[in-house]
Length: 158
Image (cartoon, helix red, strand yellow):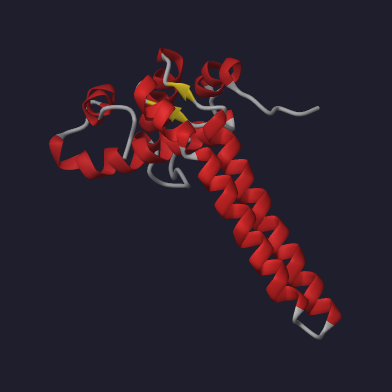
């Protein structure tokens, strides 16, 4: 379910009501892309953010318990290569779960710049529904969405 109201996306794209589901999918994808870029979750209000953060200890605990169980199961595998692969897979699953928990901890209440970026992405996805443009010269436009999202990004690395 989108954080941004579908009505805002419909108005932004000038879409007709028959394109409602198309706009909803584009909006969901835009929010997903923005969250991936930001490396954090965003929420409609403080209550939603607080409720999400409250789930983090349980998410982490469940992830660690699943990891311990997977490693225990892997130890029973007689083939050393397969055993090590199973342990590596278990670690990767744990790392992904802990990363998702961190994205929740880094969560923020959605800001106007994030809304604007998501609407830009939604408009782009709606206007350009095909991978290939035929019969015209095409060039990539600079992404205004990225520049709107950049100040809120976390975990950028080196």
